[in-house]
Amino acid sequence: MIACLWLKKAREDLLVAENELDKVVWASVFHSQQAAEKALKALLIALGVKPPRTHEIEHLLYLLQKEGLNTDEISEAGRLTDYAVEARYPDFEEEPNEEEAKEALSLARKTVEWAKEKLKELGIEC
Image (tube, rainbow, N blue to C red; front, side, top):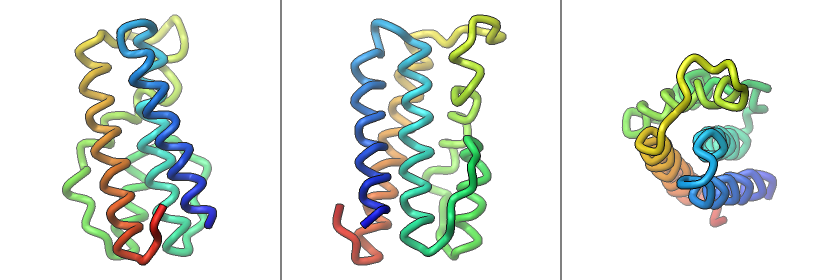
């Protein structure tokens, strides 16, 4: 199922984020954001919703809420949105530090696990 392919990509982004944590901080936060984004899009797909082309985690959470899911548990994931684009460029207002990268990775892991559990509740084992 396509939702599982999206979740697989989310897990791969988590691996890259973990790998880059103490090497290239901007890459770690970027891949943390990507992991959360892809996990949420996997869930939208499983619910029959075509995910929009957006990096806005808050918007994806809103769409999941519209489908009847309670996203309170992962509401903080919206903080990852800033890392989708800006963190990749040298004129980013404030370079993320290792502590922020650890926090971003933690939020991403939580979001990916949450999405995996919701998929399981829908009868989709990935």
